[in-house]
Image (cartoon, rainbow, N blue to C red; front, side):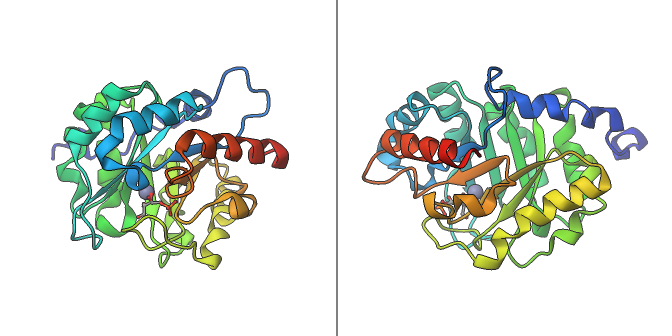
Length: 258
Ligand code: DX5
Ligand code: ZN
């Protein structure tokens, strides 16, 4: 890599972050509400287009896409072609969660496939990147910094590893299950990591979006109230239907004032 490519992202590029947080929320909201990102992993793959359109009609503002390679995690799911189809099917930005080894090989492919929309997120795993800082910088360079760069932490990784990375991250994704499958129960002690990241960021004077993923349902939503984005797979895409589920979740958020 030439010198300029090795540079840490310009600090000023982190400044529009609060504005980007707004991008994910409705302009009219005075108190910005938590955003629910339905994970299509639990959707009916045979009817994906109509499933995501139903979610969009019910008010979904961000769609979570779980990409698995059978190496980093013990499951194989979807790739850039699915991302391209989704970006055609809905108007909301996509939140691509890469659970793959060597994610740096695929960043631009996913970006080109459907992450040009404002508010799109591309997240890699801390555990998959020996040179995480370089990979984050590569995400920031996609489309002149238009995509938000996220770093995900497995349940076994302490939040303290983020300390030196926070200035260069747009988003931290806290996994509350070991990644690989939808429908698992949240690991109790991991729920508290959301608050830990918030506290760390506040203490260091950093602004970062916090996302939580794995086993989140109506009954533990309150436990992750410091999250900006909450991923929900099996709680949204199930036999009751994404529309009805999203309405119930929205009601709960209003009751809890989250
Ligand atoms: C798990 C994925 C999650 C999953 C969440 O490896 O990263 O996004 O789809 O599904 P639920 O909400 O069912 O745990
Ligand atoms: Zn995920």
